[in-house]
Length: 448
Image (cartoon, rainbow, N blue to C red; front, side, top):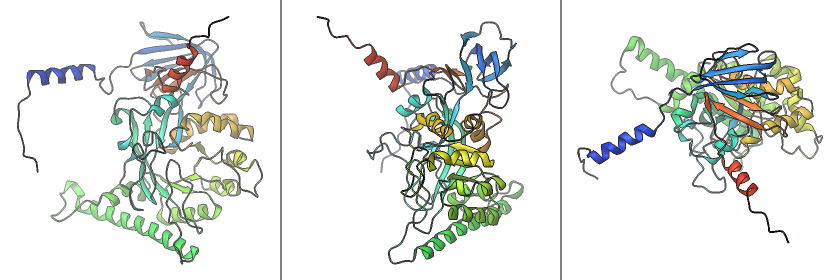
C-alpha cells in the first residue's frame, strides 16, 4: 500500500502545465469561417442546388443556397465542377476498439459473461487509431462504434472522426442498447465488430430447449430492469435521497432508458424466425427495436416495413449460402428498400469502415435506388439514432460535417477533396495518403 504524499507544484511543473494548456485545443472553440462556392449541393433532404454556396461558421452550417451570402474574411473554397455532400455515417463498426485484429493487445471489444449492458463503448475508443484518419479521408465523418461478445454487450455510441479526446469525438454517447438474439441452432446474430453471443448450444441439450431458455433469460433481464427503474424512481421522487442500504445496480440502471422506449434496442437477428421472435419481444415489452443483420430480410420485408422497424445491413460483400442464388446477398438491400424499410449500412471492422460507399454501391448494382442509398449513409442513420436535428444532411443550423467530392461518393472513381468535421477543415494526413505520397515520390531508376 502506498502512502499519501502531499507536494507543492514546482515552477517547472506549473510552466509545463501552462504550456500544455496553451497547445491543447479547447472543445467547442471557434473553428473558423469557410465558404464552399460554385459546386452542386446535395442536401439529401431536399433538391440539389447547382452552382450553390455553403457557409460554415463556428462549427455549423449558417447558409445554403444559390445566393447565400458569406461574411467578410471567410476562407473561400472553389467547388466549381464538384459536389457538396453531408459527411457519410457508417452505422456499425468497432472503430477505435480494434487496431489489429490478430493481436490481442489493441483489441477492446469483449467483456466476460453474457450480461454487460453497462458497458459504454465510446469510453474505450483509441483516439489515435490509424483507422480513423483513413476512414475520414474517404468521406465518412461519423461511425457507430460497438463492442460485443455478450448477449447484452453494452451501449453503442456515435462518434465524429476527429478530435484529441474521447469526449471531443463523441456526438452521442449512448444511441442504443446492443442485444444479440439467440437462435435455435445456437449462437446469435452475425454481429459486427466482435458482437455475437446470443446463447450458444449446450452439449447434450436439445437446441430448441436451449433457445427457449436463452430467450426467457433475455425477457427476465428486461423485466427486472423495468422493475428496478420503477423502484429507483419512487425512492428518488422529488429529489429525495435513496435510503441507506440502496445500491445502484449499474447493469439495470443502464437498461432503464431502453426498457422505457427512450432508447432503441439494436438487435442482431438474421433469420425470419429470429425476426418474428424479436417483434414478439418488442410488442411484449413495448421497446423500440432496430434490427441489425437481416440477411433473410428479403423474405420478411413487408412485415418489417409495416411495423416500421429500421434495419442496419452488413455483410453486403458476404457469400450466399450453397443453395442460394448468387445475387441473394447483393439484392437483399434493394428488396427491403422497395418494400419501404428504412435502411442504414454497417461494415463491421474498423479496417473496412472506409469501404462503406463501395458496399452500398454494390447494392445499387443489384436493385437499391441510388437516392435511397445516399439516405442510408446519411439522414437515415441520423434519424434512427435521434441525431437528425444535428447531423445527416446539409441544412442551416446543423453541425458542419461536410465533404467536397469530384462526383458521387458511391462511385469508386470519385475523389474526396475536402472534409469538414464539426466545421473543422481536416488534413489528409492519414496513413494511406502518406504511403501513397511516399511511393509516388520515390526516385526513378536511372535511364541508360
